[in-house]
Length: 141
Figure 1 (cartoon, helix red, strand yellow):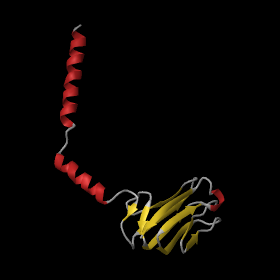
Figure 2 (cartoon, one colour):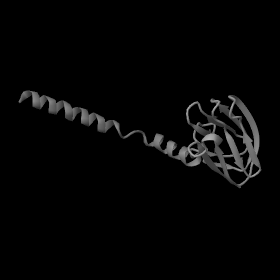
Figure 3 (cartoon, rainbow, N blue to C red):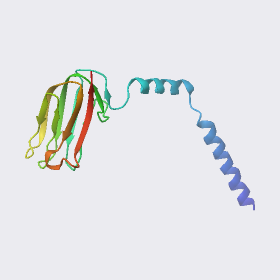
Figure 4 (cartoon, rainbow, N blue to C red):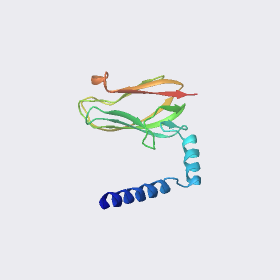
């Protein structure tokens, strides 16, 4: 019986400590909320930004912004896309209005493209594995 009461007392003490530490600093939460509202993950807020494309070594393909988040929406403009092609069985092929850039399937390495993106939908795929290795993003005016 004594052991049960001690265990219960210890458990209640830890629970009280955990609850008292969960409140956080309201000022800190406000700053985080404001930052999130102005820079949504996957949204690149303007022209001239560097983007990173990656394909391989497994069956992965992605396009990310400087923050490392997947690109979902871009503003129209000129961008530099650096593509890291890590496998000789894949390529990175970007298409959309006025853009048709690709790496070689048989090669690996890094390519850099300066592209002008206009409003619309753009797609990137690995041509040999397009059904499972693909992505897209929107460009807004």
